[in-house]
Image (cartoon, rainbow, N blue to C red; front, side):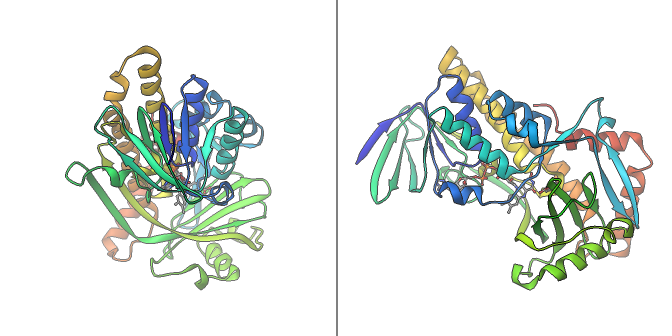
Length: 393
Ligand code: FAS
Ligand code: PHB
């Protein structure tokens, strides 16, 4: 068996694992990233599109922000379409100068891989059968199989950044782990198209036929979503069917003018709220989707991974560089405090904008009243804005 040692083993080569590995490496802390898939497979995923200010700052601190700063779009607001009208949320309503960056997760991941390569970062792709061992001792280790050969890495700490379906969360004993889950009775059908965006800013639409979202990646690449029943499959939706349904859910001033084109990616994502507690078990720390999932309505998924990584990086750097474990000891509690606030916001925004199958006429009037209140109250808009730009770390 091939064996080696490192200071931190990071399971998962998505944005969480790569960002942490890069930040630790820049602080002189040795890491190895174990990723189950090939790099091309990881980079083929189309996911998030909106970065909070905190994430943007972390990418810059990691030395991976140059292309984001060049190609990303700073957005100062977004629109909510309802009852045929468009109302705008000014993100500065929460605090002067507050913005978000529109830049795709695929590009974030590409930039992080490039930064890791530039520093000679250790990323092992196609590492399968990853297993975590001796988590409650001072000498944990990880085993995995690479191209048929069994390997072992002895380490000080293990970070589970391996997403919702990873091995790390499942390595915490069932009598220790507390899971909270809420599954929504619909999914999002997403389409990526090489067409100019329908509008300069994002449009979230509440419609009797269901939710829709107009987003973008850049001036030539648009990202759209429509709410669909959980029973729908991607093959049920031709491009033409998607475009005509999307237009039905948008105000005419948008739907009748938008440019459509062939989908270059089309997929259905289920919506769930999920939190696993604690986010630490001995020498194992969970980060990102391995610990929590939010419905994408509030654009919090990727951004919650960033605040986890911020807390974890600070704690590990304090441990290795200053012999101080306070950050690691408070990691789970601190990360979960921010996670639950983002879970609440994502759940609230999902409830405000989606058509639930069992909604009564009273439910529909209450939902509309939520929008009427939002756009009649500066305080309500400031509250939405401060959650959307990202609560403080
Ligand atoms: P990831 O899942 O991105 O990465 C985990 C990595 O671990 C993967 O590369 C995986 O291959 C690897 N892995 C898994 N098991 C392993 C094992 N046993 N051994 C080794 N490696 C293993 N968020 C938003 O903010 N907006 C959106 O619009 C949005 N859309 C989404 C659509 C979909 C279909 C999905 C699934 C998620 C979406 N998200 C969205 C959330 C998403 O962006 C996540 O928050 C983000 O990917 C979190 O990053 P990671 O924590 O790195 O997890
Ligand atoms: C996206 O562009 O993919 C996106 C943007 C905002 C969201 C969800 C997804 O709330």
